[in-house]
Image: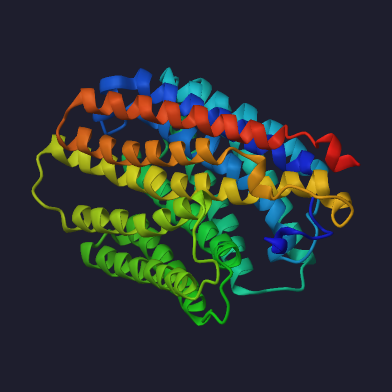
Length: 429
C-alpha cells in the first residue's frame, strides 16, 4: 500500500471528484436499467441499451479510472502529473459530456443532440489523453506496466475517434457500410484496447502490491503486451479491410493468449502472496480476474457462429457485453475502490500525524459490514441477470436490477464515508 505514497501524487481535489461522480453514476446506471425494462432484450441498436452502455462505460467505469489513474501515474511513471489544472478542467467537461451523451442516446436524438454530445466527449477524452502522454514524456521509467497504460491511452483515442465518426454519420451518412459494423469495432477497441490494456497495466502494479507478492516473472506481461496489440490491430484491420473468418479466429486466439498470460501472472502473484487473508477489496479483484474467462468463451461462441435464432443470438450478444462490463470491469473497480480511495484520503488527513499520534488504518475509513453486504448482493446481481436473459424472464431481471440499485446505494454510502472522514479529536492531540 505504501507504494501509492509518493511526493509526486496530485492533490486529492484532482482525484476525489471522479470517485464521487462515478459513484453517483453507478446509482444512475441502476435506475436506467430499471427504467429500460423489456428494452434490455433488444440487442441490435436499441437506444436505451446504448444509453445504458455508455453510462456504464463512460459515466461509471471511465470516470473512476480517470481519478485512479491520476493518483497512479506518479507510481507507475515515477513522475508528477503534467497538469493538475488541466485534469480538473477535463473532469468538468467529461462530466457534462457523459450526461449529455447518455441523454442523447436515451431519447434517440441521433441526428441532432448526439453530434454535439459526441464532439464534446471527444474533446474531454482528448484532453485526458494529452495530459497522460505529456506526463509519460517526462518519465524516465519505461517499464511494462507503463507501456500497457500508454497503449491503453492511445487505444482510447482511437475508440473515441471511431465513436465520433459514427455519431457524425447519423447526420451526414457518409459511411459505406452499415453503422453496426463500425459499432462492433468501436466497442471492441474500447473494451479490449482501452479497458483491458489499462487494467493489465495498472493491475500488474497494484495487485501484487496489495497481495504483497515478490519474485514475479514479468516476462509473461511483456509477451502479453506484444500478443494483445498484434491481435487487436489484426482484428481491426481484418474488419476494416478483408473481413475473413479465419483471420478473425487467429486474432481472437492471439487476444485470448494475451489475456491468459495476464491471468497466469496474477495467479502466480496470488500463490506467492504474503498476505493470506483477502479483504473485501481483494475478494472483488480476484473474482474479476477469474471472470475474464467468461467473455473469452462467449466471444468464441459468437465467432464460431452457431445457428442461433435471432432472439437467442441477441441475448448472447448482451451477455457478452454484460460479462465484460459488469463481470470483469465493474467487479474490479468496486474492489480497487476499497483499496485505493481509503489510502488517498488517509494520506491527505493523516500523513502529517504519522509517528505523532495513533492513527486509524485506511480500511477503517469505511464500513466493512456495508462492504461485505454489498459484495454478496453484487454476486447475486451477477448471477440473476444472466439467468433472467437466458430464461427470457423479465421478473428475474427486475430483481437483479433492483439488487444493483441496492449495491450502488451501499457503495455510495461507503465512498462518501471515506471521502468525508473526519479526524477525531484524540488523533489531533
